[in-house]
Length: 306
Ligand code: PMP
View 1 (tube, rainbow, N blue to C red):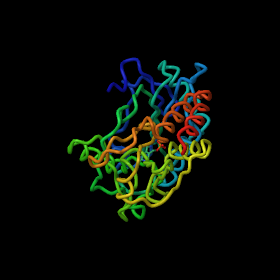
View 2: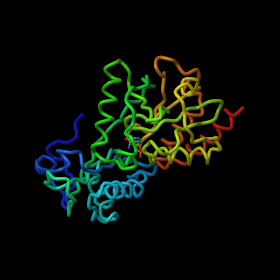
View 3: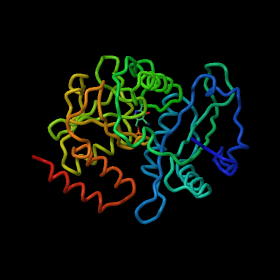
């Protein structure tokens, strides 16, 4: 995966600079302690040929909320940084891109408050984070972080050590990705994605409380309402998940990606033939503002409903 080359330009504290010339401080509190916040955003070439950042405001607002949650100063104007992101896309000749803003801390080896913070915004081409093939998922022995110990609604850098080690553990055991439980033992989410399952044409997803309430998750809930698909947010047991007809992960990076199996138990309905499969199509239509294809998904749901 190539993130940048000699020509790539990134945004750093108000300036557009060559990625290979950009410098950060090795004494940054973010590097040493994971004390920083970031976003994962995508832009798409829309059906009309325009470049559109999907849910730009929601993502940059979450960036600000994440910084506030961990007491990291955030003095950036949202409109200015959204404009800067569009410039980064144009300067790097990108339309379909993954965008990564990071707010990071100055040199500080104490646990005292900071009076300033820095921002960088980078963009690169990236295929769906977990590929496009159906996934073989493993129930992980790792739990998501305890909300009493972490502000889990914040996308804070350090939280992702949990994501990396749990995902690596699943891969080491021959699976594509991990499914983590919450500290009460209910299904929570993936290392970098929320989870839904389908049973009898209805959808279910873990309720808020122990998960990162993803922007894609919220979009899926909106799609379900619009396509008149019943969806319930609740505590979900591992056994319920195993009895599902179909299941998928959703997130900005992974988009919507179906599962082949959970702990080697295959799901009975072919993903393409499931309500979940239609939701995937609807999501991929929405991000490209392809409303004709989105409307077709409504008809497909009606055809599938008993
Ligand atoms: N959960 C976790 C732990 C994540 O890292 C992500 C990716 N940001 C998500 C869920 C999905 O969030 P979103 O849809 O906002 O990208």
